[in-house]
Image (cartoon, rainbow, N blue to C red; front, side):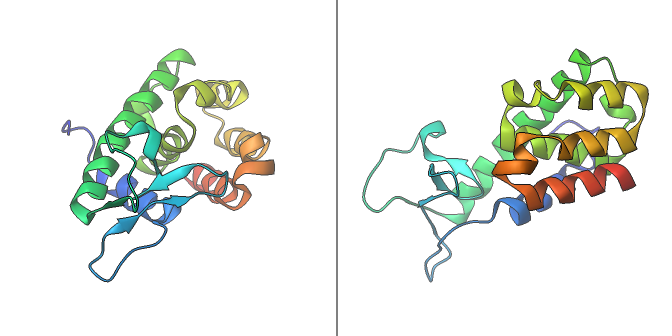
Length: 161
């Protein structure tokens, strides 16, 4: 993990809370489950299709495996958030730690291609208008259909910084 990611632990804790885990057994192992959109998921919101896991019955991973997937995907989400900031010409590193977590969490959930569709969010961040940025998070399919409660929490965090 690069040294300038002092807030990375905050991101991982946020993702553990937001993503949840689905079912676990008495040993703390994670069982695969269908998420709210019907995708086979395991660990902390990890799509099974995006892992090196073979599909078997039952599909189970350990806490250590779930944490390894979380770390790998979280690092990718941060890189995606940094790419997003470069695309919309604002300085990711100058954002507060909370706002870095918000963008990285959105990248974790949506992936870079879907995050890049948040054009007005990028424009608001370019202007340093966090009120507008917060409003743009709520003016989205994510807020209307996919995960409205999460979008509200992210919007509030963006506003408060």
